[in-house]
Length: 243
Image (cartoon, rainbow, N blue to C red; front, side):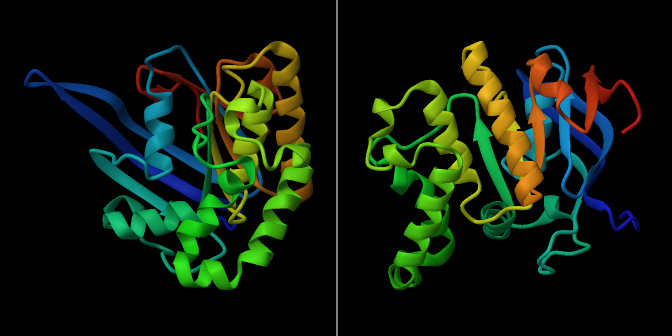
């Protein structure tokens, strides 16, 4: 664990192997990474080098074959612990409270309107009874996020009525619902045209500047990677330069 107070999240000696037809296939080969508080970190590299695998492991959506994940966020529940060793329930708690996620294909639920999609992380966090008791405040926060990302007027729309850029803005608002310190973005502009992608670039910069939210971006978008405070290149399951 790092003693540097600027380090929010440390990954140490992360390895990931898959078994294919009885053969072990290594994807991540013992990489190390430190993510600083409030930074935008871009991870780039060719397809198949392990970028999305690493992002899913950092976000506790997948587990490493070995290695440590040490998180030093605002809440002290899991300080100093190896998050990779938590049980499924505790991993879900960390994901929901500490992290946000934005994916290339949005993953908005089609049966919920835009406002309900944004509120979903709060519903999961609070449970039915507390959610009902606090619903006015939750609705107010969700609407304020939609206003910040510029689509408040779409709050009652189903996702199917949104453009690609609007869907990604809704996904970003949802990622921010529980006020995470870190948002993981997997190709957030990969399904968008150039103009719309540039608008998402600006939105990420604005949110980082105004809210202090950290972002980890896996991207092939060179324009987006250039906006990051740091860029790390992956090759053959390792970083090509020191992290």
